[in-house]
Image 1 (cartoon, rainbow, N blue to C red):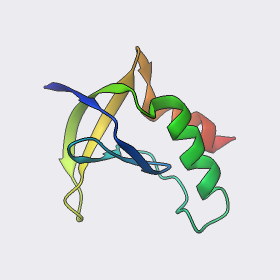
Image 2 (image 1 turned 90 degrees about the vertical axis):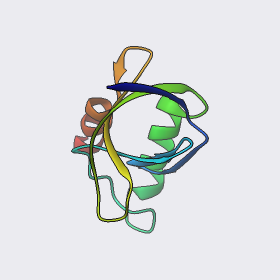
Image 3 (image 1 turned 45 degrees about the horizontal axis):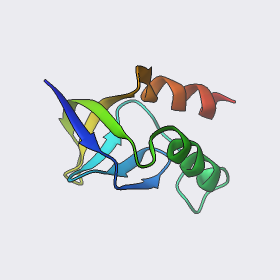
Length: 87
């Protein structure tokens, strides 16, 4: 079931906060302390920062985060981040 939510904060290149913490399914961005980590966070912020997203929950990870397929304004955010990370 698709859920609409307002993005409150982008945490890193594959995780963000609404009322809940959401991790992008099938996206593995570098950690903030790793090369490219800050740039990946900025890219995700440019796509979804402060916007309303639609997400489809796929699972929960070991940290209790929702793992989801995410879109914003018709854009597949997961695919966009994977294209960005692939260079």
